[in-house]
Length: 151
Image (tube, rainbow, N blue to C red):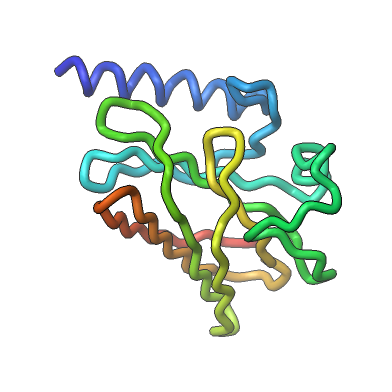
């Protein structure tokens, strides 16, 4: 019961933080898209526009980073924050597979930063995007998927 209450309190705090546009670390985390639980792990998805992404990346120019792209097709930065069943941030490898309304796939590894994992993505076309996430946390593999619509 304590874990459920803790997760609710953390979720409410992070929801408030996303509405205000800041994270606990003081960095903009964009708009929250989704919150889910997979095998007791919490996953919270946020999306940033390119201005928010560039602001978050200040001071890291010139570094090679997985999940970052210089392509002119990039429109957003997708972030997932993953917490263990006790509500603590986790370390691992995370990737996204995004299928656009036209059937084209974007596959990217993410970069870990600010207690989350993020990657540059393209949501240029209007329609429904299917987003699949795979996270390998120690010996645990988490799979999640959802749809996101661009109007």
